[in-house]
Length: 220
Image 1 (cartoon, one colour):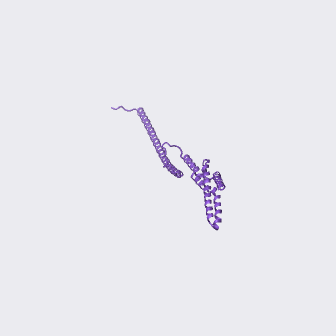
Image 2: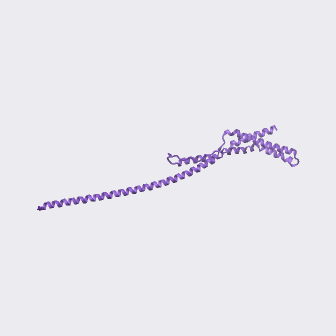
Image 3: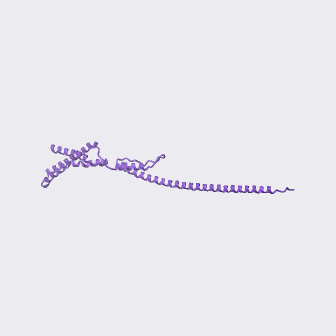
């Protein structure tokens, strides 16, 4: 037969059961709290990852747009360079491909290239090394004008009436324009060198032409 359970033992078992129940409830609550924390942390991680993905996509789009803009700018600058070199029969070819290890902002490099092309577009002065060629232009213009004047004078010698009077005057005017005629080839030289005719080249041409004209008139 079963022995009767005393009231003290029964009370102790009830307290033990109550303690175990409270401990299980506490552990369950802790487990629920931990699960909620883990879920919240996972949700935050997913949201942060989504933000990073969106930010990376925006940066990728911005980088592609910047690359297209830089490529277009390079193409324009390269075409302008080809135009600048085309006058001498030279061509720069196609733009170079971007380097795989290139880093940094390309804008300073593009600005430097634009500045170089701007300065290249600005006409400079002819170097002093072309002074002999300029002097030769003046001499050639004077000789040509004198030859034309001599031709008019020869026609005047065979002409009668008003032509006999007007042709010598025209011959003198053409001869005196000799120093100025040399400025025409001098201007062509300046244009080929992308330069301007400053006072120095003009003086060189005019002086050479004037001296030649005077020598031709004196020795004629």
